[in-house]
Length: 102
Image 1: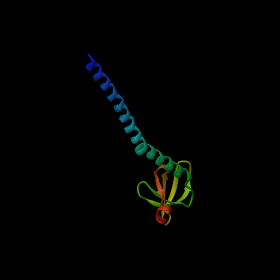
Image 2: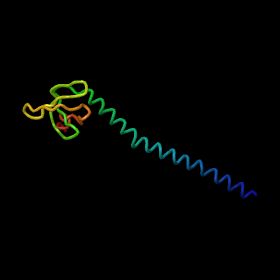
Image 3: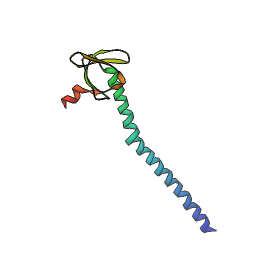
Image 4: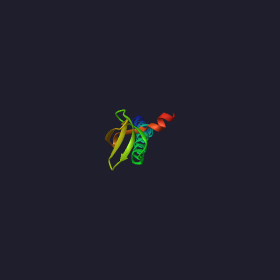
């Protein structure tokens, strides 16, 4: 009977260690995957809201251009000698002037 009680005590201890390991894995997953992605999305949203006339940008599709005008949800890009494209703000990927400076 004592052996049976000792076996039950040992089995209960492994449940706590499994819970601690699971919590540790969740914490690692959060800090290495979820949190950096949220920060990147926040920075991208801030960048899109801050674009202004005259900025050199690159779109998600790889089009390089200079912003000619900015409206609520769209921007007009001058891509080459007067050729203009109207695109959504959400399709702007990054600031080309910062990229070219590197």
